[in-house]
Amino acid sequence: MKKLIATTFLAAMAAGSLRAQDQTKVAFPNPGQPRKLVVDSMMGSVTVRGYDGQEVIIETSGGRSPARKRTSEPPPGMHRIGSNGGDVNITTQDNTIRINGNILSGPANMTIQVPVQTSVTVKTLSGKELLIENINGEIEANNMNGNVQIVNVSGSVVAHSMNGKVTASLNTVMPDKAMSFSSFNGDVDVTLPGGVKANVKLKTDRGDMFTDFDIKLDPTSPPTVTADKNAKKTRVRSDRSTTGSINGGGPEIQFTSYNGDIVIHKK
Amino acid sequence: MKCEEAKLLLADYWAQTLRDQDEMELEAHFATCPACREETVRLESMWKGLAALPPEEPDSKMRSRFYESLGAYRLGAESRAKKWWPLSPALQIAASFAILALGLAGGYALRTDNTSDQVAQLREEVTGMRQLVALSLLQQQSASERLRGVGYAFRAEPSNTEVLAALVSAINNDASVNVRLAAVDALHTFSGSPSTRQAVMEALPKQNVPLVQVALIDLLVDFKDRQARPELRRLASDESVNDGVKQRALWALETLQ
Image (cartoon, rainbow over all chains, first blue to last red; front, side):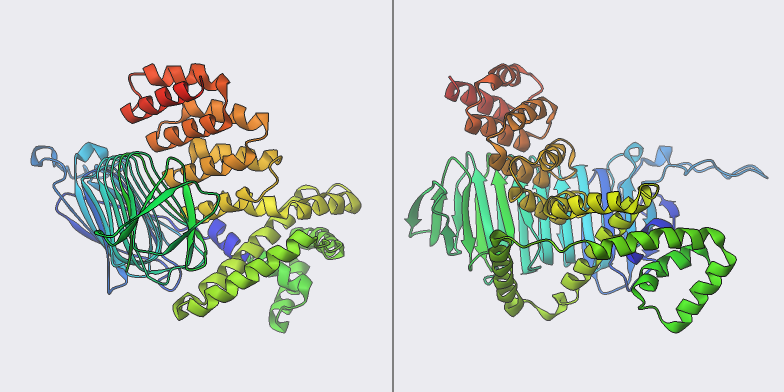
């Protein structure tokens, strides 16, 4: 209850904005508490990288054109209404830092450094690349038209791309978290630690499914399995969802594609 | 002491686990603040009502579920890295606080009714705890938690309309495509009821994520729902619909001949 009330009442708001090719640092209000970063970008690539520090460092490049980058000083006795349209808006609430890309400033690439122990949620509409690396926490990534690449992370991942490839590599998996990886047109390529315990559910309509894990398929799932010795991977093929378990089973991990392949590697 | 601070201490006050100093300060606050005093007296009867609730009788399913999860927990605990230790219990405590707050809020809203009505209502809510877990997890901010909520929904009564409504709402509105997909999957369990078919039919035209559209089409084929054919025909001829989805709709039309 304390947590709930604290969330409701102690919502501290801070706001700022920054201009092209700028670097801004924002600190989490409670460094000892769970941290969360939420990024919502319209255009441009996004990189979120864990580093050995306490602040969030935001760098943008390729933002609004110089012609439009004009800032008037307020006349004496007056103040500005609203922000003057920087590349990104930053708000802090509780221990969550939100970064919103400004659609008027055109495609801006963002590189954001955060403490390694941070939960990260990133959504981009037409970012070429969405890269998340060196993070330990809950990760959510959604890139509509580009690739999602998640490297050297621990915790849990929920990732989707409509037209791009989804690649994720986890060093350790939080034992009680559900995960899901999906792409409509791209491949789904996931690397999990060898000892991971999971119930898996796989489905691709037009692609193939490969793994070097020993997946124990459920008797109810209707696949045909053929061993492809050249590739040293088991080939699994089905028109419906294939379900099974790895290392005796655990939380559910779902892999979905329509036109792409699904590849699950053992780390 | 401010009223907000006093409210934070109430639960401990009733449970008599408050430190002496806090208790004195709290009582001093009651002496000066009639509003808090009244509220405390009102909620205290609620609190005692909660304590008087009869324990839920475990049925045989619950017993086997308990041992299943205990087994899973043991397996998990062996491989669990040390740094994850504090996380899981902390989450459990937070969840129980949330449920407690829900109960208190419910009781507070019903404060004009007499106590036995409140207790009866609460008993009903306790019976539906499993649904509640599914429903509350589906409201979480974390997509991973919402996925877990969908997992609980899988195990809910196939006739439970509230869980069905929550799953349909997730399919239509969830911010995460992955949660939407999992929710479509969960509806396979609900396939028997006509209201599920109706809900899926209504969800399909609202959906704009191709992967979820395909999953919904596959679900209709699984239901062998021939009433879906007009909607499938519309999808197949809609210019704005993704090509892959159109082909899937055509395939579904053939299959449902």
